[in-house]
Amino acid sequence: MASKVTSAVMRKGLRVLGVAIRAEKAVFSAAVLSSAVYGAMTVASAWALGWATENVVLPAFDAGETAAGAMTTGLLLILGTALLKALGVAGRRYFAGVMQYRMQARSRRDVTRQYLRLPLAWHHRHPTGQLLSNANADAEAAWAPLAPLPMAVGVIVMLFTAAVAMVITDPVLAVVGFLIFPAIALMNLVYQRRLSPLATRAQQLRAEVSEIAHESFDGALVVKTLGREDEETGRFRAKAEELRDANIAVGRVRGLFDPVLEALPTLGVLAVLLVGAARLESGAITAGVLVQVAYLFTLLAFPIRALGWVLAELPRAVVGYERIHAVLSATGSMDYGAAALAAEGPARLRVRDLSYAYGDFTVLHGVDFEVEPGRTVALVGPTGSGKSTLVQTFVRLVDPVRGAVLVDGTDLREVARGGVSDVVSLVPQQTFLFDDTVRGNVTLGLPIPDQDVWQALRLAQADGFVSALPSGLDTMVGERGTSLSGGQRQRLALARALVRRPRLLVLDDATSSVDPQVEARILYGLRDAAAMSSASTVVVVAYRMATIALADEVVYLEHGRVADRGTHDELLARCEGYRNLVTAYEREEAEREALESDEEVSA
Image (cartoon, rainbow, N blue to C red; front, side):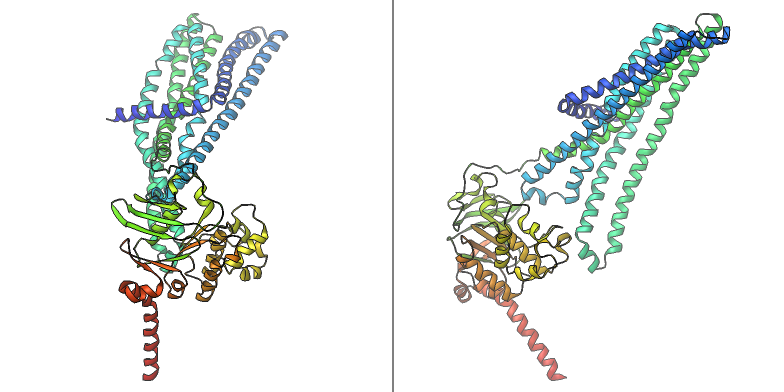
């Protein structure tokens, strides 16, 4: 079983390396060529050392002097091979680095683009920490073997050249030295069997640690306000300790492997020296030959170690590549058509027999209604009735499992990529601001004039507090807009949508933190066609009676279905569920005030 796992990892690892080689043929060839020059010059340095021993060192011992020509030749040989070897090392490292970092950058770009292509439903099933790990740690692990790979391929030249040179120099000593190779091969096999499952587990734990860290940081407010710091710290500590133990286990295996791999060639050198000394004494070889063969055999350890470095990284590379490939091959990415939506004028929205499900749980059942151009419609319903899911289909964050959403009679699935976001804007429940200026958060990098930014801010009732900020539009709002109140953040998010002059504006409870009077002014402004160059059709998910009353029509949802629709007054009169829902807040306030009055009388 273990041998099957090892061979499978080896095959998968070689396929991963093949992907990189095919993608970067020229760079890989340059790196291997540089490594081959290094390997050849390393072997040549052994020959130069042997030549210098025979023609410079030994004559100096025998005669007490050395010819100037021989000394010059020996010096030039040693310096020349050293220089070429240094150039080979520099080229190998440079091109190997270029190849590795290009592949890592390509993987990160491909993964990120795939994240943007995949629908929101896919993201709901995958933790953010895991996605971050795919784009970072997995991309690094997948291409980690590329750093030693050109060296390993190139030094095969050195290995072959050294072996041939030893056989030519003295076949007997070569055979003695080669006896060590079966032991090295066996050691590599054992090493791969031990390391592969440990490396796989360590790579998986990296993603799990990232998931917990991201979740804890993202929920910092909940953690702190509910006093869960110790529990979150303990949860992170437990997983981090698992990762620590897994990395230690990997390091322990490597720590056992490297010394043995280093020792085996040394044992081979000792064997060569013992046999060589006997042959030297018998006159079968010269001292120069013995020095040359012994030195060549010491060189064999490096090619074997270089191959070992690649093999050591293969298990992690396979895991990282498979995790990346799982993202890149994920199904569910949205298909686009070629249709274009009109650029101006309020849009007509048609929801036709729409159903949506999260897995096996259906949250919307045959929703059907229409919104006339320029009208304001309020979506009202109890928690869990599917309002937020429904508005996500309006901007095509998700596609319905049945039915369709049409804008001006065109199914959104038939619109070209980017066409929906050009005419439809959603302001979601949870406001997100970047660690940027007010201007940057409103424009998001688009070349929008400041006068249009201020116009959007005025319509969102945000121009007053923005003007009061220390640097106005250039004020940094902090990470997630921490320097602003909840209502201010919501108004900036609304201005971000309005500055794009949407034909259909969707507000998913986007003014819940705004003062009711300010909210009323915002909605009145949205209904005023003179406030913008073109008016918008507005769909608003609302809870406050004052907000709902401003809408031209109300669509009331219950259990994922349209239970009733009409004006606010009509639904108050005929729909008990609607009436109970929208008056609940007022009843609660009245009961609280009555209770406070009774307490005052009793006192």
